[in-house]
Length: 136
Image 1 (cartoon, one colour):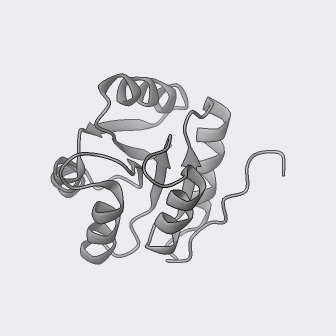
Image 2 (tube, one colour):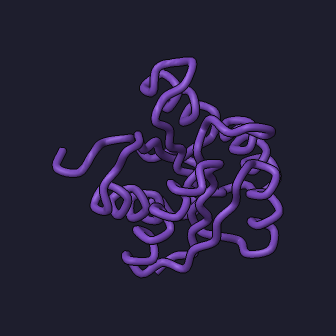
């Protein structure tokens, strides 16, 4: 399976997402914000980063841009439940700025599996994976 870094300021969501990813057989690290994500990624080089968009300090879009520059080919899946922009606009913007995939919250274990598998299947390209849900 894969090494996955989950980045979210909501500890309850981080713990749920961690359990989901571990249930899928992945090795998981977590970080509470963008700064901690970069530090954790340097130490563990996850194959997939599941990144919340709206976080205090360094948000998910800023962190995705930074990680894409510092670690070319990093595979980021952005996620959000909403914010000051609509969820759809936010997720589309994030994919345009370097995320490989967008995954709206809440999501199921199957949706997480599909997103991680699709991003891993993209290989070492820097071409984002289209955000089509399972069953499409």
